[in-house]
Amino acid sequence: MPNMTLSLPEDVHRIVKAHSEVRWSEIARRAIEDYAKKLAMLDTMTQHSTVAEEDIMALDYKVKEGVQEHYKQKALKKTRR
Image 1 (cartoon, rainbow, N blue to C red):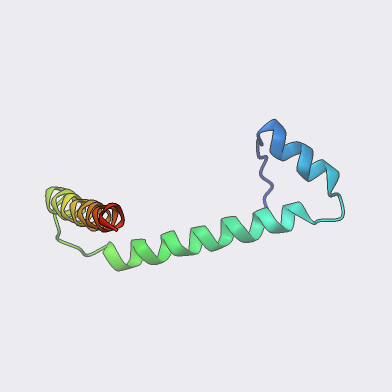
Image 2 (cartoon, one colour):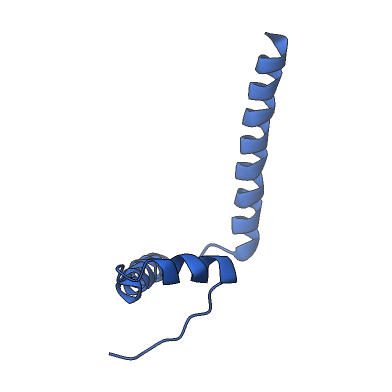
């Protein structure tokens, strides 16, 4: 199995060092493996897609706009109470 070196922020490194009973390499391996499998699945699902990047960006904008409106309405309801 190939090896990989990771860099951690100092605060995280202190926590990791304080808990040597944890198999950190196993946790990192599983997290990377899970994420890689999700990416592979997305690649498989989209490899024959004919959707243009402009269409994706337009859809992204509409979704974010809808989410923003949802929370704006929710905030308005709270202030009216």
